[in-house]
Length: 266
Image (cartoon, rainbow, N blue to C red; front, side):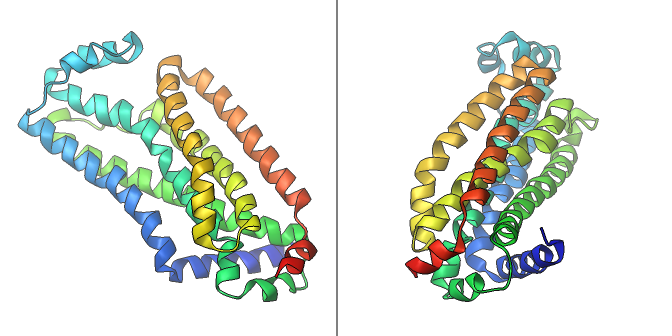
């Protein structure tokens, strides 16, 4: 594996992503809505004391409900939404960003008429495939991590008049961000890169990939909600399983990738 070649291809693809409004807008819209607008709205609502969440909290499992009900009434809305409910939804960010970028990996090259030139570069199939994977995985993880930092800052600043302390990040959040989020991003690109190889344009890749990725979104949100109750040990174990599945998908994709096959279809 030629690291210099991979770095050069990676720099090329990352530069293309930065210049593409069609890729940057979807990458930034959902994180901004979920990680900036939502915590600001919840913090302001908690200040005004306009929502009573006690009835809803009583319907939750004891593992989540008890810590919230033990807190002062003013803090319950913040702890419920920002401490628990947003954590599962957060996994949508790396999954959707990786899906958008992965859909563009090869299908986008076809649309831009640059695929033929790319396929004739004096690089190995493995180096080319690895560079495409990294050009999707690194931005997806970076958006998730930078978004998390912004989320923590906005949440703690806006909610300070009510909480009077820094309440995020929690241990659960750290596991979700640094263990589960990269795994989910890798899983999404493992699916979508292979879809992108088989279609003619980005729109087709996104439509077909959406049918594949949507169940993953539902599964990720549902499983993470359960993990909040199960505890950190189970979270680490489930994260390991996601990494294992994602690694297998990407490894098999790399082993099966052949430029000659793609070139013959052009």
